[in-house]
Figure 1: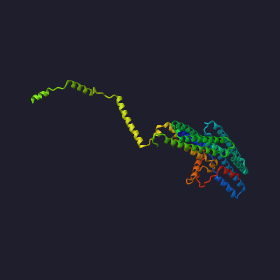
Figure 2: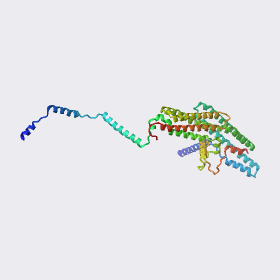
Figure 3: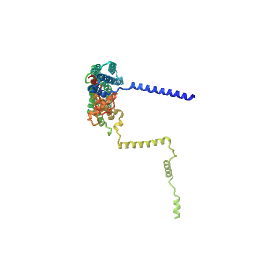
Figure 4: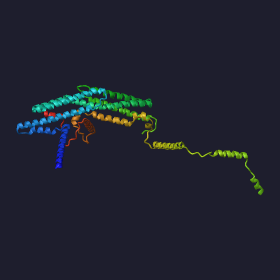
Length: 262
Length: 162
């Protein structure tokens, strides 16, 4: 008599706990889920309704408004997710160099401002009619074109530039080591080796100057149009420096009288 | 004949010659038997091992795969080591590709790499775009539909503004 009742009790408790766990997992998943950034179907739905619907006009307006609101929320969520990803990448950059910190902080503040802008826009969607939803879409579009996109572009340039700093640091260290090696092996007595070493110094100096120029551009607002071009040039000059390093390496192997090469 | 033999029997060596010969013979013979010590054995083994090592090194040099240039000047030459230079130069090349990717490219490409039969510059650009998009967390899986164009955020806003 006693045992079956106890069994039923525990079965019920287990079922409730299982249900709670499933619900909690569902909530957690919904919170972390990234928004769906696929708009093609909704736009087709909207265009189809505008072009081919000949039924009840009130129904048409209600349906169009529902589609517009749903699509506008999707677009805003997607744009906010884009800004969040960019902010996260900026947060992950190194703060090792003091000179980078103010630029990094400014990008983070700007992206936080953009996220607030999207949150404000999203909170207005529910109260809008068809005309208001069109105005809001236009407003966001213009704001993105004039404010967000230039900043996001520059933030992206900052990420590329920040990653370049490891390469510049390695190249500067390598040139210092090569100088020491060339001097200690007395290769400076060879005219070609001396010319290659001097060429490497000049080339790396030019690359460093271009790298500094790119940092200066990243620090400006509104962002200059061709910061990425400056970054690219700095890298091309760095690549040229390595070509000279390779030539030096080959020459050193020829000049050092220690028998065979590999 | 018998007399002759008796005379021969009486022949004896010169005493001074026999003394000198005995001294010389004694000087040639070991005075005692010496047992080799542990250190002697160790020294002999080391000599043999050294000889073998030398033969091995000579074989290595003869067969190849050995560069005296690198081997004898390692500390001074590592900075000119082609392998290290190549690794750094390749990293720069990748960054040059990434620096060719603008924000507009990222939005337009929607993170889908170009087809394998696309021209090389386009493919490299596309790979760089995809890599950067992945780094930014913007990359998405390639669309399963045949519709190649994916609507961007700005295009969707344009459609909503009409």
